[in-house]
Length: 111
Image 1 (cartoon, one colour):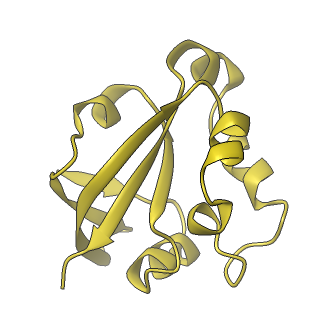
Image 2 (cartoon, helix red, strand yellow):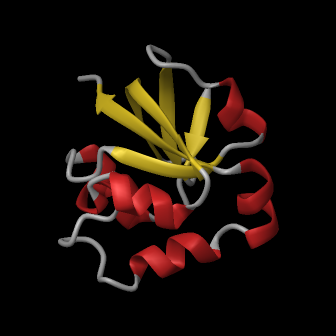
């Protein structure tokens, strides 16, 4: 199983463990993931790493997720600025967020 990320900063942050939470809408492939799954994190077919899912937390929307989760583990300040949460929210339509909700996928890199 592979989870694709959209930019190299995200991949680098995950690779260095500055980022340990991947936020996604709870639909499609994401709904098949479970705690304990080992998956590949991929960026542009050139970079990949293996991770284990340690926790999956469900929320109604990104605002609620950001109220509960450590936002610096979703968007580490050394890689992203404050407006990054707005960019994250822009990746998904409000209709999909309202319909499916979102999840915080906690991961740990496998050496």
